[in-house]
Image (cartoon, rainbow, N blue to C red):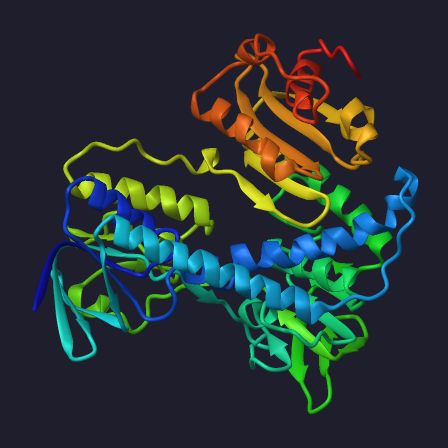
Length: 455
């Protein structure tokens, strides 16, 4: 039986980062993985989807080249090549994780790990002992009655990213990040796309203004949307799938994507044998990501929202530092940015205006549209805006919402500002380079205070 200071079950962005941090702190570490290193994020989610979204963005960029003095045309669209490229990229980055494991002297154990007791994991016929254990098994598809994946006609995101032969038409249930991103890619490559969502807007967890901006863009692209539907079911036939919408007609498509949420991968890993508590499909943890069983931690999607790769990595760091005797800072979910990589991109941190109203918190709104930004106009990147929600009394950042071509690259300043509990005066004292899209981060805060200089 092999023995380690720390055994990590799962090698996604929560697991492999936790393993590296524990190794940095002098621990003898092993990581157990039944598939490819990097988990869903590197192999089925974050990385490959961004690759195909880049292809989609280039299709739209080509359409605007004439305005920039470049006469070019799209002679053909090869969705299969875009998908193949995404797989090549994922494989390369997965190998990079393998290099990091070797560099940090972390032993990789291949196989399906199951907890036997609080210090032992069974992998096939072998046993692995750990003084501390970190569970990072991720999450899987969530289904509802009438919305069940069959992996062929009714697929989920992981089948979608492997789909080389694109259908002529597809219905998408769910207008969160997964549904919206795949809609953007497929539409750019000529697929007839129709999104169905029970909430009255795309990207329901985002600020209403952000949702409306994306909806306007999607209408221009020709993406159909049925928002605020009362109920929907999908049934696969031999040739097509039928979407039945309550109070509406039936819709037929070649395929259907079900993207209605995720649930933790908690089945079959031995939680019951150890007595680890769960709640609504996720492992219950405290602020240090320790479970109800001392010495066993759970990080990433398996421990519940926010189901984001960067949150998982940060949680892994906290868990490894805590089990090593340090006192890591707690992670405030309101300081975790969310990103959606369609075009225009959407990024946010903190509360939405809707949430502030519900909580009765007084705030000022500052908004800076990119159509008034010199760099954005010169670069033909005019869509979107920067919106901030500032505390009325102290000028603290309550929420920030960016929609635009590089929104996901701009949110970092606001995330740092919010984490450091800054106030508006500190943004006023910060020099933003000109001309950039980023200077609108300062302009939006000025606007919230009635001091806007360029709008």
